[in-house]
Length: 121
Image (cartoon, rainbow, N blue to C red; front, side, top):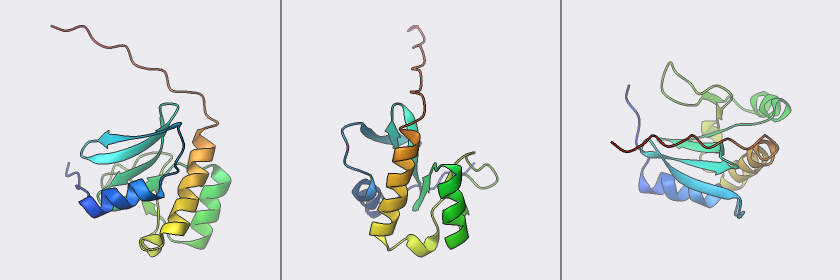
């Protein structure tokens, strides 16, 4: 499976549109970036594409207004996530609004339990 790598400009844009909130953690994921709240990812970067996890109502509103994209590897899109449309690729303010909606939604979900670390060999 080929995983696209984001450019430095893609990473900078992603960090710029993620909400500034002390509960937000941005960390690397498979050469890309993910934005998390309470251990749950609410937005991710996959190559140049930004994907978000929205409530059903927000996802339907986004899909009604724009043609969205599957988010993740070709043929193996991440369930529950939608790729923001290419029409928003140069509209940081609108992108930030959708990411904020994703943050607000995912912040209401139960915190993700930390996986126990396997013992060192």
